[in-house]
Image 1 (spheres, rainbow, N blue to C red):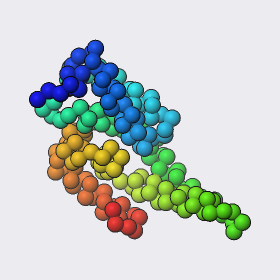
Image 2 (cartoon, helix red, strand yellow; image 1 turned 180 degrees about the vertical axis):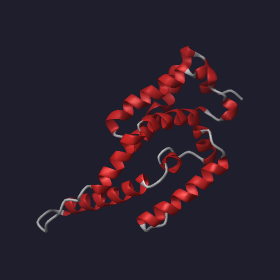
Image 3 (cartoon, rainbow, N blue to C red; image 1 turned 45 degrees about the vertical axis):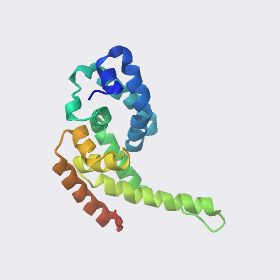
Length: 177
């Protein structure tokens, strides 16, 4: 069954409907994975690539949403070194000391920073495949089937990568994930 958006993939005149329907979601996903200042550029590039490759879209392999997430994830992969450097830098950064005279907001900020440091270090400790699966599920809210379609991998591979990643994150964070 072809939806309106499937038709928008094939028809350059209607492609803007696909952009309007998914741009913000893709931008948010990229913004969570990389710096926000690059998210708009990569989101736009995602749709440029999708437009250029619209003839290769195959609805039988999955929907438009996983297809777009797959393109976005591949773009993020090309920025992978910067992403890893960012996670490692956050993990190494020293939390600022809050003295007793600061209000609760400062304490909250320091607590949040320590949490971000731990999470960043844990994410940096995952393989690229594990990190992509975790972040597609967590940030993109994709199902296992959608993650499989987005990354071009088998459903079982998604499940095993997510299982390994959860174990690693649980061990690194000391919490149930």
